[in-house]
Image (cartoon, rainbow, N blue to C red; front, side, top):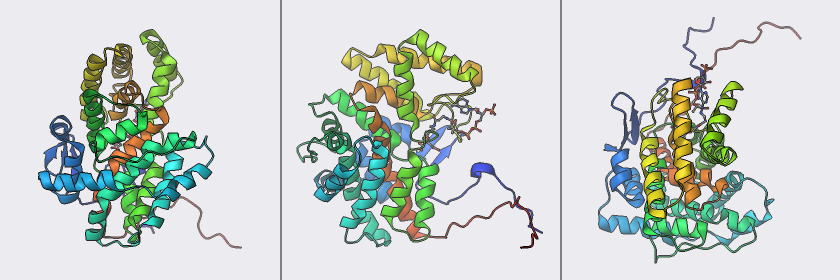
Length: 371
Ligand code: SDX
C-alpha cells in the first residue's frame, strides 16, 4: 500500500530548497535578496552591485564592483557561437536560439564540467556578460548583421541596451533598463530556477542547468508572459480597445498575460508597482508613451474587479522595453540574461550543499495486469 503522502499539484506550497539567496515574504510583502529588500536595490543599487551581492553574499566594494563589471563587459563571446546562430533558421524564436547558444557556450569553457563552487563563482561574471552579449546580438545576427561586442567605454547596462538598439541611449533610458535588470535578477524558486537546481543536483554542470532554465523560462505561463503582454497591448491599440480585448478574453476563459502569480496569488507583485513607476518616469523623460500607461491601468482595473487578480512584473516590463525600442522577441531573453546572476547563485549553492532531487508519485494507474 502506497504510504500516505500529500500530493501537491505543481508542488504548490512545497518547500523544495533551503537557501540563503532570496525569500518572498508575502506576509511582510517583501522580496528579500541576501538580506536586502529588492525594491531598495531596484531604486538605489546598480545591476553590477546586485550581481556581486548574489555571488559574494555581500554588497561588493568599489574595487570588487570594477572587477566584476570588467569581466561582464570584457569577456567576448566566441565567434563560433555566432557562426552556430547563423546556421539556425532566422525565424526561430529568440529564446530557442538562446537555448542553443547557452548550451554551446559550455563547449568553449575549459572548466565547463567543473561543479566546484569556487570555480563556478570565479567564472560567473564572465558567463553573465557572455549571455547578455549573446542576447543583445540575437536579432541582429538572425537578420544578417554583424554582432557587436560590449565595450569597456560603457557600463554593463549601457552596453547591453545600446547593442540591442544600435543607437546612442540617454541616461534615463539606461537607468530604466538597469532597474528592469535588477527587478528580474532573482526571485526565489520560480520554475526556471527550480529546473536549474534539479539539473545541478545530479552534479550536472552549470551550462546544462542554465540551458534547462532557458527552456523553462520561455513558457508563456512564466517568462514568456512579458512578450505576450506587449502583443496584447499592440492588438488593443488604445484604452477602449484594451477594455474590449480583456473582457473578450475573460469571456472565453482565457488567461490574461501579465496577471496573477503562484506566490502572490491575489496580491500585487511588489516589483510590478515599481516597474509601473519606472514606466511613468520613462514616459516623462521621453515625452511619449502615456497611452501605454493608460491601457495598462485599464487592464489592471478590470482584472482587479472581475478576477481579483493583480499584475506581475512582466505586465509593466513590457511597455518599458517597447518605449526603449527593444524588439519584442528579446523581452524574455533579456529576462533570462538578468536572471542569470540569480540562477548562477542557486547553481553554486546547490553544488555547495547538494541533495539529489528525486520526488515520488501518487500512482493512479492499474496494478497486477498479466501479459
Ligand atoms: C513570472 O514564480 C515566479 O516567481 C515567476 C516570476 C519570476 O520572477 O520568476 O515572477 C516571473 O513568471 C510571472 C508570471 C508570468 N505569467 C503570466 O503572467 C501568465 C498569466 N498568469 C497565469 O497563467 C497564472 O497566474 C500563473 C501561471 C502565473 C499562476 O498560476 P497558478 O498559481 O497555477 O494559478 P491557477 O492557474 O491555479 O489560477 C487560479 C485561478 C484560476 O481561476 P479558477 O479556474 O480557479 O476560476 O486564477 C485564475 C485561474 O483561471 N487565473 C487567471 C490568471 N491567473 C490565474 N485568470 C485569468 N488570467 C490570469 N492571468
